[in-house]
Amino acid sequence: MGGIRTTVGRRTRGVAFTALAATTFVACNGSSSTSDGTTPAGEPIVTEVGPADALTALVRWQVDETEPVLDEDGEPVLPVMYVVSETGGTIDVGVQAAVVEQTVDDAVVRFADERAEAIDDELEDEPVKDDGVLLMVAELPDAAPSVSLAVVRYRNVEENEALDIEVTAGPTGVDVMATPIPS
Image 1 (cartoon, rainbow, N blue to C red):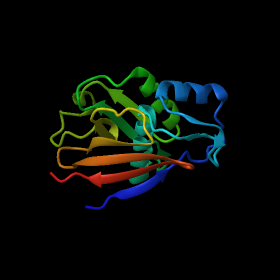
Image 2: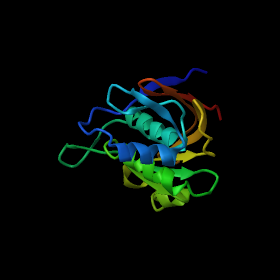
Image 3: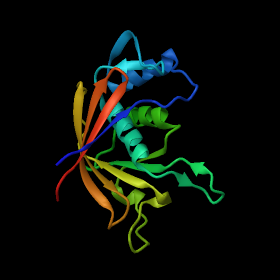
């Protein structure tokens, strides 16, 4: 079965990485970049995908897959995404901080320790709170040039899908390949 390939790079935002932010991101992430190499957006080139890189790419991929969210005045608002470890453990706080920092202009990312924290179980179809999406991630991989994540994307009891997400480091960001896992 074919997948969907997307190149995920930081959108132009007019704010450059500071050396401290880049150092913090790499230190928390377990990834590396070339000392002189940067992407066209001025970010360090990622040569290995660490846990924070993988989750950041997953969030940005989901943003690209999502219809724009509008408020009551018709103005665009950031989509809400809950991220939870499918194994029941807490995702490392340093990884959480790096993902939130890297996606602050893309989405409202909330980490939960349990699936139940993201679901409105008082409604019949048990949707994700705040009209969001829940990304349930299996065990996070060690840093490597390419990593795979097993993810369940959940909106409500009727709308959920198991995916194999492959994140590969590249010179202009990371490539994300999403392949549905047959049920």
